Image 1 (spheres, rainbow, N blue to C red):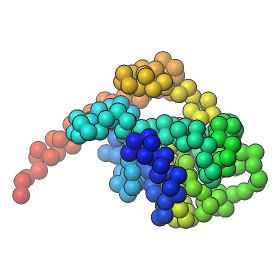
Image 2 (image 1 turned 30 degrees about the horizontal axis):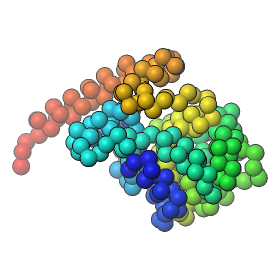
Image 3 (image 1 turned 180 degrees about the vertical axis):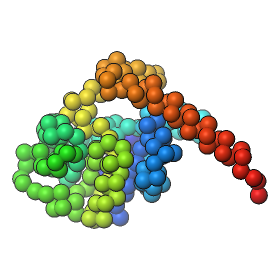
Length: 236
């Protein structure tokens, strides 16, 4: 889906619940090595191409998938909030400070949005709205955002999605940190040049060095093993 198509999906308040996944390079590595993450992604109704390398691979396979199909969680979420819709959002994840900051930023940006925020550590409510619980919010939510880190957030969604009655649930990784300002959002022109990795590395080398220098090599090793295994399998 494109950014606009994801926004339209959320605003439609679908029934039954629609599960959204996404694949960046880190997620591709997890898909090939982590059974739980692969199960979540295979069961997702929509899987977004999050990041230039994943989009480029898809574009080579299908040139009709233009740059509008390179969509990160913050892309469609920010566009959704800019429309100031009447939505009930449940956001689970991030640090207590970032969770509260994301709630404040979201309701400032979109005053008609009802945003219930729970951090990803204690699962305590971090917004300034009426006191509530995750169990109370899940059946009413039009959109559930879970940003606990890949692997953990997918398991959380699988355990709790059954309590939802409608809407969209998405694994959004560090999106809440971008919304709160805890992490600096990469300008889209940088992404279009394929240099998002460099921007993030310079901005926060401690957080991103492993993903930039180590994970691509790990992914390459997995892909080589997969290709070698397919060659050794007998045909027929």
